[in-house]
Length: 180
Image (cartoon, rainbow, N blue to C red; front, side, top):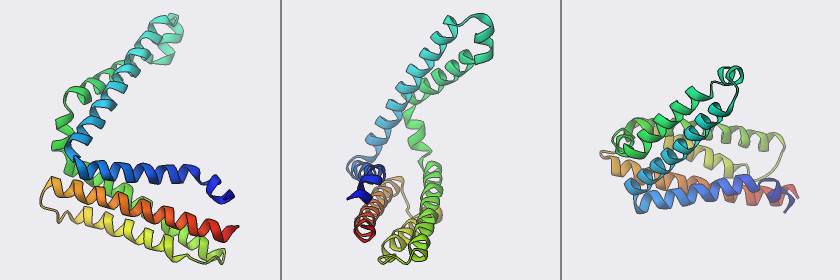
């Protein structure tokens, strides 16, 4: 139980990945557009807050803070995201490649997790090894882009998130029992 308490953040991330995966399977375009729009609104709020912060500073502190330019950049980015979310959806194949890089890095981190477990002479090392293999395979599938349409990329991404998160949770549960 102590092991699981120490890794609560990891479990929450896995549960979040499962939720995102399910939402991507249910309505990929709508979910993504909603996330992008919400991010845009957040950027707008941050931009306005930064501009107001700049206006309240004395001229020397304001010049040093660069709050005005930061606020204007956040505001412009936020407006673009809020009103042009479809641009991101159109460029999804490029964004998928970025996701593939993230999945590959995650898989390589899981390789270290597997090796660490082996070096610590713990059992059940194969669980994170399977998760690492799945992550790396998913990344290379994304890089190869055999999926003909963007919709299939969304479905693949959703399934990959769910499967990886489940394997990570199972690994943490079984390894947590061993460490007690």
